[in-house]
Image 1: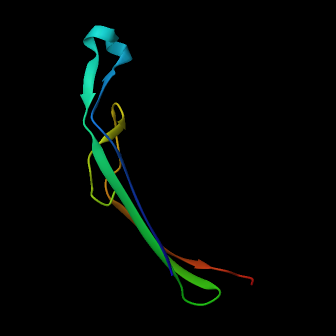
Image 2: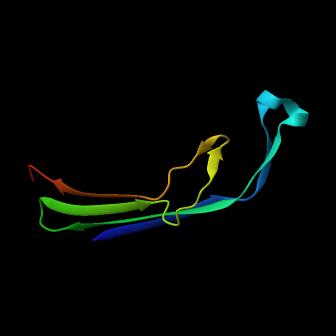
Length: 84
């Protein structure tokens, strides 16, 4: 079995929206913390089951102005090795 956890984020920051100019386009982006986690389990030599959850805390944030990040998502699957 293997597993991982990753936590990252950014503090509050002030930036400029270039379309509105240097004086009219100031905005404040709130800080955020985001976590991801996943694991995989080898059932046999040729069969592995895995799963991953992204944005574990379901935070709403924008890494880039105007583009919201994806909400919590889960992925599950099976890997099959056709040859050893």
